[in-house]
Image (cartoon, rainbow, N blue to C red):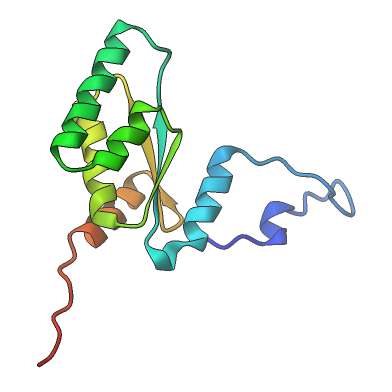
Length: 138
């Protein structure tokens, strides 16, 4: 995905020249993700429901599990209820995303990766996270 003026201001035929358009957070995160695709940046949009005892317990359990996997910075940011987590390491992003998905019933996350979202982003992240490093020639 590339961001262009034509993409932001499509010709609707109603006006000769559009001067305003609307964006939502997904448009912005997708554009950022696409712009940083060569850097393999992953973005998790965290979804924290209104706090009740069950949500708080689920959040605490997730934070503990993340600490147990050595994802201390991720755990700290989630304990502070950060809305967006930006990863520069696909393997750590994959691990954090799966811990959130599998171990927390009350907290969710949407994944954005290389200009993709949803299942296609998950497949691309999984591939990059599990890619074996190239061996150096001797």
